[in-house]
Length: 317
Image 1 (cartoon, helix red, strand yellow):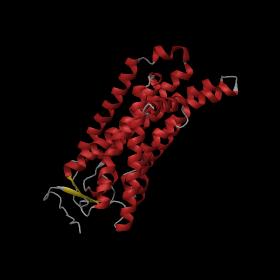
Image 2: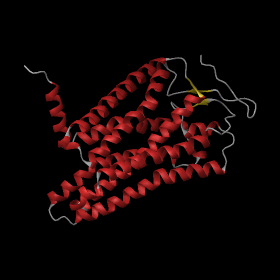
Image 3: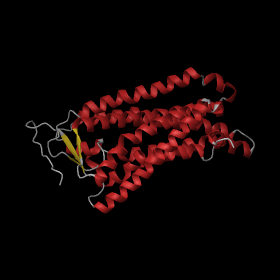
Image 4: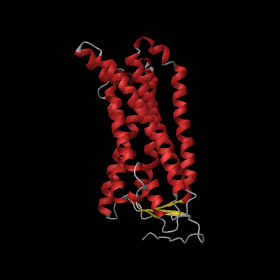
């Protein structure tokens, strides 16, 4: 059985954490292993395929698909931060993760999550320009602007992740080293800390406002202008066509930010780890698998690019 270490504040240094995961039942752990392996395989296949299609097909060399390609890139690595460790804990008796491993997982997961928040806001701006200023779209959404926006997304995400990680891992974990979750995250680590003060809470709310609420406000503002522009279109068919270009992005925004806010917008005193660890797989594991489907199933250009790729892959008779 996995040894659990207890630490006294000021006397011992935390060297590892124990991830409890979802269950200790061997049969259920095997079921979860098969489930997460299937989801992860679909995530790798879906996002990699979408990236290859966007890179190879000239018809997809547009600002919208440039952002979608970067979203797939983020989702690909975002799920890779979590799932390999989940799979390992499902089939191994060793549930430990080193302090450095926990810190690294925390840093990359926060950086990728914040970057995706900014990227979804950039995609909303792209849709705003496409619908509200169609004649200026090519000029406004230049390649240089698109690259700058994506670089800002990554830079902003990982700068803020550095702030969060440095503040979290300088806390004193004095109660236990057992994390009641399947990965290193803010709520379970805060539960283990004995010196969570108002300054740390202020840092959390600042990061929530700058990395989550600000993108949400920008997205809402973009869609207010988009809705106003769509309502000015006289034909019903024109309205539906304009709205269809935003539907995939809206689904991603609602799913991602909805679960994100549910987990992180509450004060630490109201964290329920048993409940939260049932919700967190939605945005950490399932959404990275769903995004390629959301952006491709109803997209004629992606379907055509996929048919073209399969045609090239078939050997000549």
